[in-house]
Length: 147
Length: 227
Length: 139
Image (cartoon, rainbow over all chains, first blue to last red; front, side):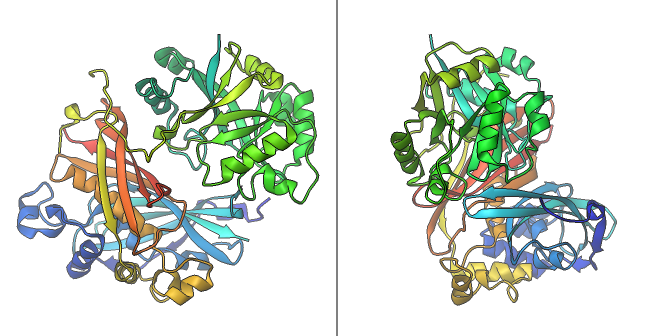
C-alpha cells in the first residue's frame, strides 16, 4: 500500500504570489490554441458581449504555473511524474489585468495498476482567486507517479 | 430465452470514469437497435458499491443494473461477481496486489465467481503473467472481448482461451457514456438477479457479443423523446 | 448556437481535424512556464531520452483544444462551459493529424445543463485524450 502521512490530505501546502494576466500573453495563448471566438480575441465584439470585455478562454485557468512545482511540497512516489488529467470547475471568467492566486492542497493519494505498470496517483486541488478574492476556478490536477 | 449483459462497466463511482448510471441507461435506450442489452453490471475499480440502489433507474429504463467489482491481483485485473459481506470482509479490494489464486478459490467458496478481465492486456492481463508464472486453477471464464482493447489485445485473449479451454465473456469496460454496451455477453438463460448471473457464469452457457461498429465510429444524432 | 430547448442527446460537436506543430507545443510550454524544466514538450532529444517517440503536447494543451471545441460550439450563445474533465491516456504527438469531436450524452432540464463527451483521436481512431464537459445554459 502507499505510504504517506494522512495529515497532508486537504491541508493547503502552498499559496502562490499573485500572477498578473497580461493582455498580450492572453492573445498569444489564443493564437497558440487557435482560438477565434470573438469573446476572447475581438475587443469590439467582446465589449458588446455578455461579459462587457475580453475574457480569457476558460482553459487559460490551467496554465498558471502548472505541474512540477507541486512536487516540491508533496510526497513523491518514484522518479517520474506525469500529468494524468484534470477536472476543472469554471466559476467566473478570468480577465486581462486580473491578478490570480492559487492555493493548493493534496486531495487524494491512491495506487493502481495499468498497462504500463503500477502507478501512484496524487490529486492536488488548486483554488484560483482573483484580486477581489473571488474564486474563478477549482482545478483537480491528477498526477501519475511511476515507481 | 436469453439475456444480454454488459459485464464490465464503470460508473462515476470509479475514480477514472465520468459516466452517471442514468446516462448509461439512457444511451442504451437510444442505441438499443445496435446494442440490444438487457442490462449492465457495474464493476467499480477496487471497491464494491454496496449501497448502490438503482431500482428506480431499472424501472425507468427497463434495464437491469447489477453490481460487481474489478480488483487488482498478482495476475492482473479480475472481475468479482456475487460480492457479499463475507467476501468484502475477507479481501481488501483497495489492495492492488491481491493473491489471484486465493481470491479465485475463496470467492468461489463464498458463493461468487472471479473472471479475469482483458487477459491480453500488457501487465494487467493473464496472458503476460502466464509467460512467467504457472497457470491459475479453478478459472471458469475470462473476458474475451473488452471494449477498451488496443490492437492485438483481444487476439492474445483468444489465444489464451483456446489454449486453456476457458469460457468467454465480453464487456465494454466503459468509462464514458457512449462506449456502454459495445461488447457484452449473451447468456442462454434468463438472468434477473446477481445470483442468477453467478450461477450462469459458472455454467459456461454464454458467448461474447461484439456490437462495435466495423468502421471508425462517427457519432450520429439520435432521436429523443421531446422533453 | 442553439438554445437549451433545441439541443438533443446525441448532437455532435466537430469533428475538427487539425495538426498541431512542434512550435505550438513549445509556445504552449512557454506560456505554462515549464519550457525550461520539461524537455518532453520542447526538445526532441530530451523527449526520446524519456522513452517518448519525440516531443509531445502538454496535457493542458489537449485540454485547451477540447475546451475550444466546446466554446466554439457555444460561440456567442447564451451559455457557459462550467466544467471540463480530461484524462490523458496516450501521448498526443505534434505534426500528426488528430481529430477532435464530441457529442451530447445527457441533458438536465431543471439545471439547464448539457453533458458533453469529448475526445482527441489519432489516425487509427485511438482515443488519446478523453474528457467530459458541462455546458450551463442561460434562461
